[in-house]
Image (cartoon, rainbow, N blue to C red; front, side, top):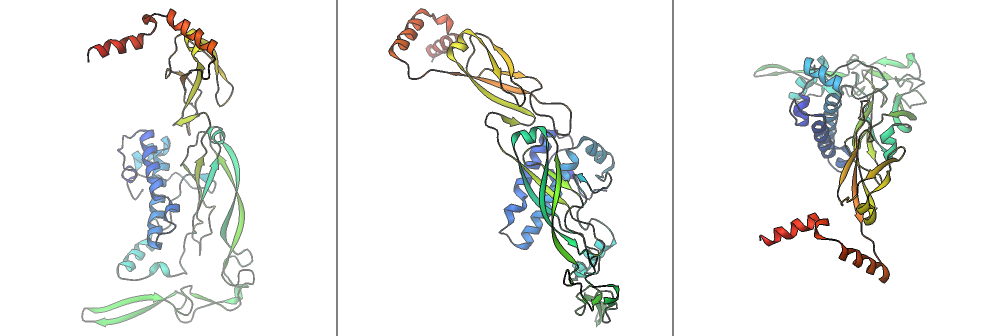
Length: 378
């Protein structure tokens, strides 16, 4: 079951629209992005990272129609595992007896999580991926280099040269912790601390692995193949499960969190899945009407401008926007007409315009006529 209310995490109602959920997520993601906390204290960094993961998980669930339906019905976002691409796996320490005991010990100043012989999940890796406008519109494949911590291939993560080079710690008996019982006026009180002989591992390595120098872990440069879906937007996140750093003592691998940055287009402005473009025409074209070709992300589309077109006039070309994220339908293209007035006219051209102006009546300027009539009433 989900531990927290995803709607409350994003600050939206349960009836919130897709756009409202996206807007709330973007605002919170910008506020808690880990890059903004690089100069903060360790505690502040950790709090921001946890919050960022929390809102990312909530958005991943509520932005997907199927996941949202399941969550509304069951209160859970668990939809199955797998190591490929996806959009969320529960973070480290979500439930289980180990977390319960960890909380109990923490409340008494203990250090249950410091015992290194327990399973610990691997670290997540966060990175930014910058896309061109068209790459985001149509989707693409990318190969991204990542550096992650892996279990040593020669010792399998044990840190020992071979199985005979590991022995159980004699001081803690392999538990990794030391327990001390004190008599107090309130009765006996037990405290625990990390074993100082084995460092909490419960084992002593007598002959360390040469490849990892006994650490059991090595850094490796790997290539992550990313498939970017069509219609992805700036600020959205893709999570690749189990592709981060390796866990310790059977802990799960971390994730790779890819934060999408989309470069702006020179002509188009994106609003959701719709595109907006300003198209300039001459004043003669506006007055007489004309046929123009509207650029799209694919082939140009012809459109007939009626005579008397005005600056700011807008029309829609249906289905020529971007593909809706995770859907098959597409948005629309909105075109705004900008009537451009000629500059640097010659004397002859100015005379021609004056002649034309003198031949026109006020009825041919209805907007100006209404304006002048209203002035009289002031």
